[in-house]
Length: 335
Image (cartoon, rainbow, N blue to C red; front, side):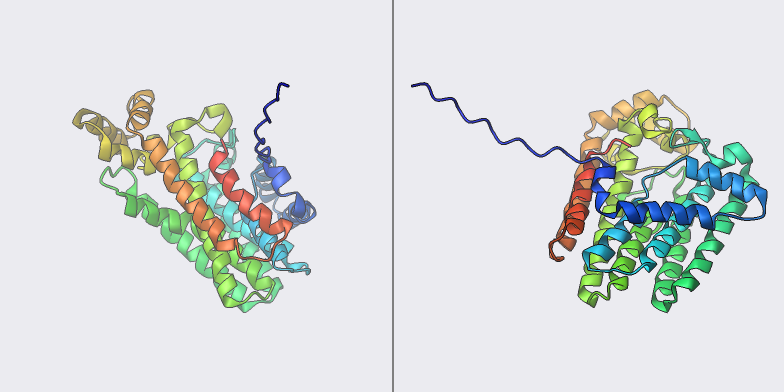
């Protein structure tokens, strides 16, 4: 008798981001409604830029993490939607200011607000979003939450200044790079995760675990963003490949390549960092040939593992499971 060999078990299909966030889909829709409501102003230009921002979409990862952690800890109130919107407003304000500083003209495949409306309007609407976010924090009625978000906003500003100091500087090392990532990106993820735990009255140790999750997954997302600048396509990532180098930003793949490259390659990359010009296709090849893409992905993977460890002890629930799955999504995404 012929025995048919058993087929190997198939790995479960990786979920898309909407599938991952399905357990908080109603709350995410409520966040979108609140964003539209709170972007209203009798100043027409604010509304126009607000519509432009909303139309550009976005993953809404920071508010989603706040919602998932609050629900994973058993929260059943309504303040999580308000504060998730605050987090998104702060994030959007930083993007508006970033695009002006970087002179960017494309984000998520669409013209940036500064390209469409001008630098002055983008900066001022960014200021409007910051101030509206603080108005909403007052509504939440928690001095602790206000302190966390005020501190986070200040650290984000520090990160912006640090990044400005790093631009066009080929001597930037991994420590300086990670210092910018910690302040500019990870801080708001960390604040979102901590606030989710605070809303649920989590024990201090659990709150700290959630904050570590946010900081680690935020760091991983930024590293993968920087990888995609050399390992993606303009159609997929929504901006030109190599834009970071055109802006003079030495990100992790480039920093590693500078350590591993031949003297001639090193000179070519250093010159591109200094003046924002060069053969970017060739530089991307240098980054690939020196194993710098895989090195950066390994660094992101270590952050994702740390994030998973941080929330693995939360009570079993679909919300905790989706937090864990987000660490996998962070590694496999292409935009």
